[in-house]
Amino acid sequence: MTDSIATDTPDAAGRHRAPDAPSRLIALDVLRGIAILGTLATNVWIITNPAGLIGYIGELQDASGGWWWTERVLQQLAQGKFLGLLTIMFGIGLAIQQGSAARGGRPWPGKYPLRAGLLFLDGVLNFVFVAEFDVLMGYAVTGLVVAFVLATSERAQRRWMITAAAVHVVMLTLIGIGMAMDSRESTPRTPLDPNPYADGSFWDLVLFRLENAGGFRLEAVFVFAMSVALFLAGARLFRAGVFRPEGARIRKRLMLIGFGIAAPIDLLAGVLAGGDTILFTRYGTAPFVAFGLLALVAEYSLRRPRTGFAGRRLTEVGRTALSCYILQNLVASILCYGWGFGLAARVSTGARVPFTVGIYLLTALIVIAGAHLWLRRFDRGPVELVWNASYRALAGER
Picture (cartoon, rainbow, N blue to C red):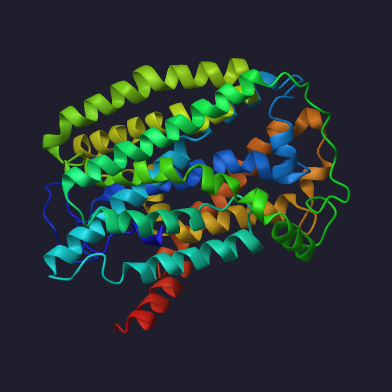
């Protein structure tokens, strides 16, 4: 997104060019595009639930019906992988911005806190008016912390990364122990009454998010340590040359860990155990799969530097990542929520899975087409244009 868009990106050989040069590293844009459309593959299950995020969480362990296996497999294929990839991409974006500042003789983090503040504001607006599962606020806070960490030595950064990862693992372990020791029977889920997702107006849903902001923001607090570790890992991988030919060994190891070890464990645990293991797959195994995805795209881009039709469309989504992230949640909300077409409440439980797949495909098509048409006339997405103008005004730049 805006925070992870390079102001000076290297080409495939590692050379740095002007900010908007055609030799920018296309793999970064492709990865952002994959991450944005991939997060939709997770979030769409929330939006197509008649009770929104509340209903989605309540039904994690209740999947049933003829589409049961399909639902679990589709959800697990997306669950956490693209969130992890997006988080890693933000760390790479920070490393690129730091490198650009160093080459330009500018201090680091310099004016980066302004960028973080604007991203946080974007997140607040997105949370209140579009989606209660917003990630932008969390990325803004994490980015601000990591920006200062990147100003320290390599040794200190490694310590921060290891410590953050360890804190995250300890938290997951403690939660697992607590869940194993909890012998209480689960209580029946109480339906939302009134249900702002299905029956409320746009403003009703805004008020509902504000009234429940503490609960909706718990995930951002919980994943803070993980996000710090992934930001720093992304920055470290970028500096180590994961996108350059000499990074072949790094890419091979990442793909082995991501696809050879983490992916099978993640898929089996998620499909066979379902909601019981979502914390451990979404925040445990999924980030390793994300590293595998990163390495796979980097390897593919080096072997086939010319992008085809699909690559160009993903690149366009990646170049307008912030706009597309907001747009896809907004489009799906219009289709599904009561203040829009209200389709989610009209679909029977048995048809929920094909309906969700259809909503995903339609929304993705609208987002991809929108990015393509917009970039035919502009060099940035609409939200990126506003964001960039705001930053320049606050930073006193022309």
